[in-house]
Length: 279
Length: 154
Image (tube, rainbow over all chains, first blue to last red):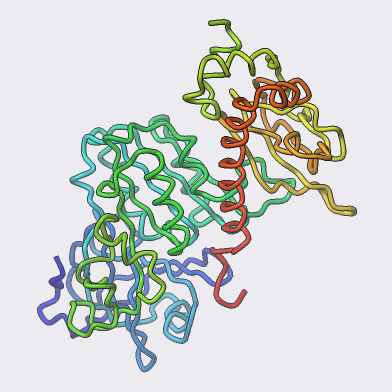
């Protein structure tokens, strides 16, 4: 699945920013469309390489609906020079794009099962296409549980949308924050702690997890403690991706490449490397 | 099996407990209900009972002078409110407020401590379960303190 949709995976296509929405002080959601032709199809969990001219290129997961053709949506946090250049693009700004790349979330394998989605902070962005898919094809899945951990109530990503998801009678949505003041009446505590409270059938549950690596490690452990086999737990990994097609080795993770074998990876296949400091 | 004993053994904290030990603990239990906003525990008060939540949410709060109460953890069905009953000086270190209507089993800690002193099998079983809970909460607290979702400049 690592083959890019563009004829030459190293040649970026030009995309124009249709809309830029500020999600937080340092985080922006960009809606982008190609200057010419159609945007290629993607699957939930895949990523694009976004290129800020003269600055550099970074891997960013798609955060829009895969069935919404003709454009890509990316939520980007300013972390360094490249992400800073990309988040400062206004409407009509132009950037380069290669992709889509990488292994997607296992939406087909999840069919007929309970699905538990666990997102931490900005990790909600790569999971949002999977959530769109689950809600758009709700009849294909059994129980759908969405657990979201955020820093504080003021920094809940896609807040309005999370509130809408919560109104669905057949989706269980729980949000927890690390810190709160008296105006917050929701959960306080870390998101892995929510796992044990949720009703799901561990034998037939498939879990998808994305967030900081420590959060994913603790969450995978909580899911496993709740009876979910490691083969049924998927995480989205992040490393320094350069070529995006498994050639350069910058994103090597043990015996695998995150860009080609990931970013979505099955827990049992990476469990040993996951907790290894040197990898 | 009496009603309270059955409820006790169905609670996740006591899952798998021997019926005989369950019967001993149930002798210290009563059913309680708190309206939203009511307090289960108050900081500084004697830790003479703890709670097994059956329904509802409880917010654990710390009061700091000049600030509104800060919630540092919320607990839901299947969880335990109160650990300080286990070790001297048996005094609560925080407030526990019902964030919604709460149904719980209240366990008389003085009664249970007395039984543990005379039945060390019961005491050891309780200590194993409580230490496991403490370790889980300690790990969660460490994770919470790491501020994992902060941006690089924060």
